[in-house]
Amino acid sequence: MWRPRVTVIERSRERFAWGMAYSAPHPSQRLNVRAAGMSAFADEPTHFVRWLDAIVASHIEDRLLQPDRLEEVLAPVLDRRHERGERRQEHIAELNRRAAEKDLRLKRLYDAIESGVADLPDRR
Image (cartoon, rainbow, N blue to C red; front, side):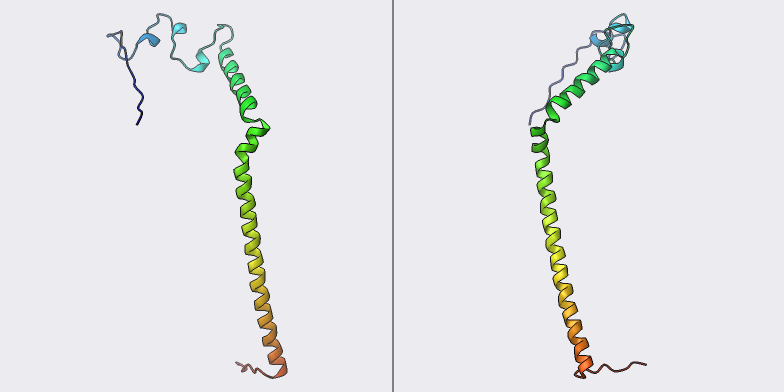
């Protein structure tokens, strides 16, 4: 089983876990910061986040939302839906067949009662 290998290099003994990324003298030079703090332009603090959002949205549009890709992703879902619909129709047909059998039996019973072949006792 593959396991990632991580090597930690600490250069500062005064502050634990403040390696190269956090040891820059000025906060704007630090590497490990939130995306909102990574703008290349001081007067546009949200520039990087907006750029990153545009890149991600463009990638989703270009790669994931293409008709061929959507068809590939959704085809199994549509197939399962179609199969479920067929099974449901078969089940409905079976229920209708059973209901028709019961109706026929009930009609024969009514016919037998009306013709006097069957006599149901009066339960009063």
